[in-house]
Length: 158
Image (spheres, rainbow, N blue to C red):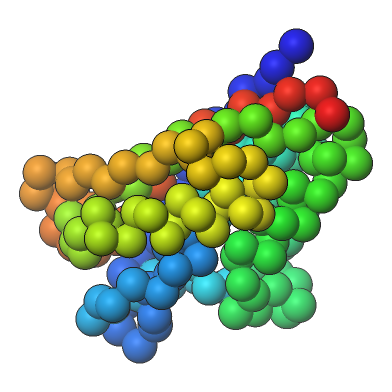
């Protein structure tokens, strides 16, 4: 039996923050606003993995009301969630992620992001799907006000 989870995250782009996606610092004039490093890829994937294992969500595990998570490295949060999923008898098998951003272009950073995610999940890089899409100028994403991410994760029994 396999289990599938879906995750979503979005953050506003703001001045004075670095842009981190999938653990990779991406050169850009603005970064994502958030309590942690606001890594929307890591957040959406964490929710997908936790959801597949029926272990709640990132907000319950790492509440933004807790100062311990202020400016936290979201890849470490993802690693902690993966550990809890493994403790519950499940192992990541595959994931697929879509980043929706008008800017910056994701393509130059895809190999590094995929490799980092594969390492945290403990799966081959060929089992990590990642693509970027624009919002064709529509809505808050199209106006360059923020970034959204959708993630799907499949787990298999350990």
